[in-house]
Length: 121
Image (cartoon, rainbow, N blue to C red; front, side):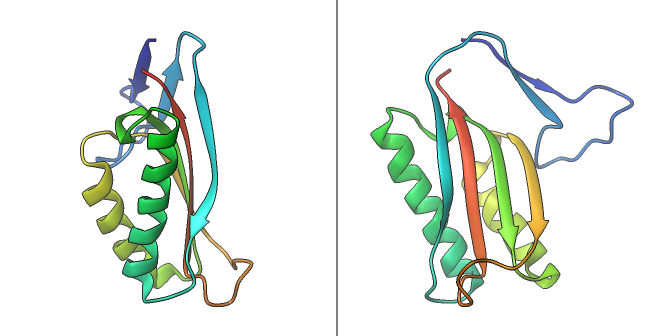
C-alpha cells in the first residue's frame, strides 16, 4: 500500500504533522473512536488515550506507523503545548495529518480525547 505525506511548497508547513496524507491503494483501514480517561491530570489522560489507541492498533495488526490521521480534542487552550509534547513523544517521526480542536467534552472530568484513522502500510 502506498501512503504519501503531502507537504507542498506554498502550503503552510508544520514540523509535527503532515498537511495531508494520500492513501493510494485501498487496504485495511481502522477508525478508532475518541479515546480518553477521566482520572489524573492532562498528561496522564493524554498518555492513557494513546495507550488505549495502541492496544486497538495492535488488535488490528497495526502500529503507530500506520496512523494517517489524528484528531485531538482538548477542553482548554492552555493544554495545547502539553498535548503537542505528548503527541510528539508518542508519534515521533510518523507525522500523520492532524487536527486539534478546543471544545467541551462529554464528561466534565475529561480533559483530552483522541481519535485516529490508520491504514495498513
